[in-house]
Image 1 (tube, rainbow, N blue to C red):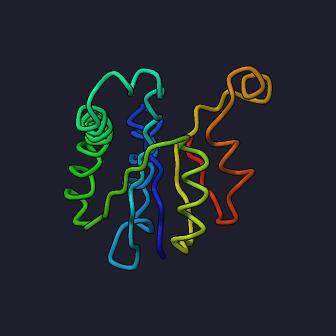
Image 2: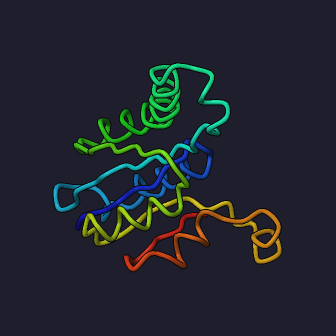
Image 3: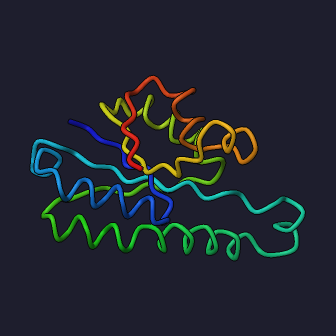
Length: 140
């Protein structure tokens, strides 16, 4: 199964990884994992005052902060995962990548705000569910 793991480095991501580790059916060579991190874009007005290399360095550092513990997790599990980062709104990019990459499943942690919380705060998970044609497994 080709699985897209959407990660943001929060404790919800860590709970999702713990879920994977606790369920043997998610481990093993029958699965191909791609870990995705979406980094929000630096506002254009702010980015205009620094060199492009500084902004790119910021994006890379943000993604690496998310990826490093996940790399360690997959290495301990004996899984060779690939890692993808993109700049923009994470929910939109997750849905697009899941569809264009022909993934069988999207796995992601969820904050679990509930309906009222989503109205006030918004939710990446809710937006992914609304826009993604690929099945999504939310771990709370």
